Length: 118
Image (cartoon, rainbow, N blue to C red; front, side):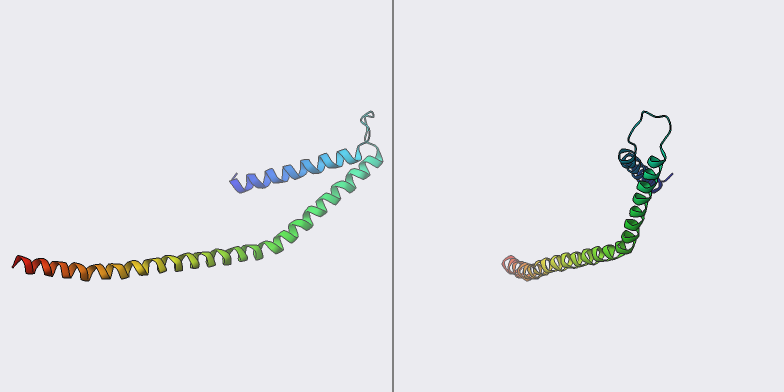
């Protein structure tokens, strides 16, 4: 099994365990009898149906909204990357200007050194 399948199975089992625990706590009133009473069965069925339907609705909304959330995050990341690149290029331009100033100075100094050597 791949990681995603394991994660999906784990999530399903956690949800199943929560529903089981919640419905058991709400619906089972006595453990003194061997058989489950018909009202307890009906209560557990309603409880489980309610949780399953709720989960389906939540997942449906999640699937509708998730692409929009991802698109907004991508736009935000692209904007941050553009701002970072603009800041880096702005920092790089003064450095190139300084480098061009250094080159003429070096040329002047070398010319002076040649003149002194002659």
